[in-house]
Length: 270
Image (tube, rainbow, N blue to C red; front, side, top):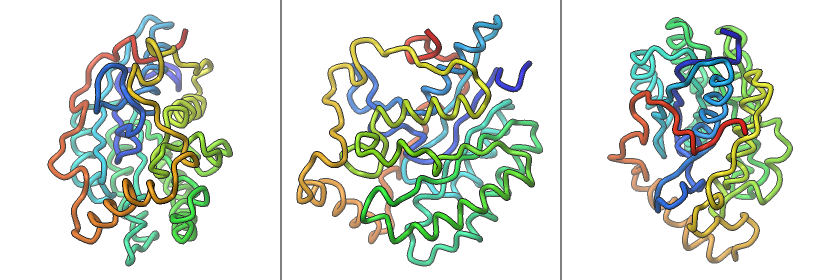
């Protein structure tokens, strides 16, 4: 198998990998997301070689590095994947006492376990938070954490998905109306960048039947809703959960907990 051909892919992380704000057509409240779109691309590439791909997505909104290392990594190892993607750390860094070096060290134990199990690890760094005014205070922490990501990748022979370096993510249209999660356009872009990072030569995804949202109202780009609306609908509820030490993902299970063939409708090469 070539470096870009895989048979079992498992995605780990939080809401960004779960796919929030990238609506599945005709399924209200269900999300697609860049990892699922990447699975479609990889499956299409595998089919060109007469193979197929199985995919599991263990990500759940609100999860932190400790959740990934303690819960998601062991489950992934048990599935014996040859590819695992990891994007995590944003929720951790927003804590007042966050130590980016300690967090990175904890994450490295999970990456090491995945590499010891023989998986190729696609390790994402974090978005540059300068796109949103309320996240800019965390930019320094994110930069330190991302520097550690490159070191982890070097030491553990992982592949870095350089999210910070994608200039397109500075555009408002890449972000959903909550100003935290990617829009469908943003998810498509990240899936394409991830595929190219893995060496897949043709990374266009097939259009989802009808439209990106299948009749579900499309997410407005982050700059299109009034600030007061954003504050009431998104910011204050999020702050309330943080103060109460609860998460939007409490009690939730992963949407794709076991490896299964990738539905051909969700994407892949034309």
